[in-house]
Image (cartoon, rainbow, N blue to C red; front, side):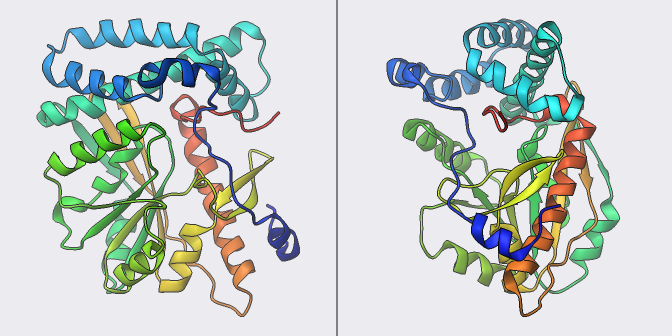
Length: 321
């Protein structure tokens, strides 16, 4: 693990976007680009209105279409999986990319289908004792997850029977129209979560710290730096990887634990949430070293989760050359 404080200070810098790399096709296609609002609206319409038998057809057709059309993303998926699964020839690399897009398509499908037919879904929880352990305290909890499987469901762990308020911090969508559509869906979802969008207010960090001190739960992504956010370079699968300092810094400031939670898709409408052991951020005189220690431990948790389901790791930008 990379944890030398001098190294950390020299490498703590604003991060680039970790979403799909945008090329000329983004400007050309606009709302019809893979990041555009058209696909959000189409998915919502299709998977909340069409009969269930159409799901296989839609997933197969669109997975194949995007696999053939999105060469840059196809290459990024294959490249990112090499440190996880080992070197691969051309055909194996293509198979890995297709399999990952297939898994993403099903997670995307079931995300919207859940809005129309929540009774079709079942889920199990592993490590629920860790959730109960942190809930027994009076302070808040920083719940972290990664872009693995149906990751948005991570905040549902224990939420139904917890009296605590849950704050969810999301990254804004690339397309402003998609962002507006997402906000409309969230406002109509009927859940009791409080949603914040990263970067929309300078006072957000203070607001979240106060929420934690009041005993609330704050849910964050820990595997992708927010564009322009501060990072620490850690080791992921033996490769250097910038991770956001936010989760560890926030937990340290509020003196609360970090609880890693990961969601995996185990089959058609079947999910599994895994709650890992809580991480306490040290509180010594060296803040940078404290944050680095916790972030390195988060990196180990992310690596563990990816190894469980490599093809459910949804990172569409090439991380390493």
